Length: 96
Image (tube, rainbow, N blue to C red; front, side, top):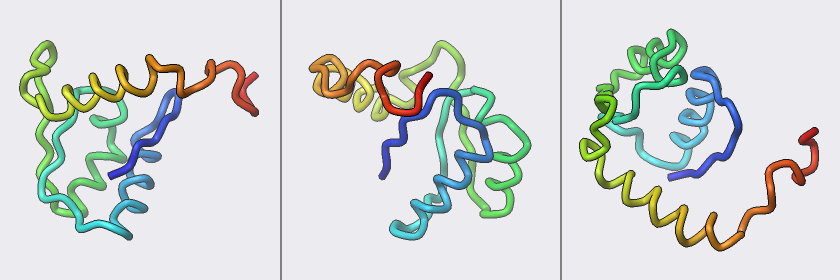
């Protein structure tokens, strides 16, 4: 598993990240994600097709369809982000 933090990621970037993860972990059989541009674009859909993965999109307004990741996000937000582990985005080097 990996946590990548970026502001405005593209489908092509998602596929490169997934390829890097696959170097260290067995590839998934199925990917479940929200309906958003980076997961519904041609680059991501082509990558899913080429790798033979099943894509399951979570219906908008139905976060309970992926309760595991919603719970993880809540814990991550409460235990990391809300505890000020990260500096303000604007103070990171390279952000103008």
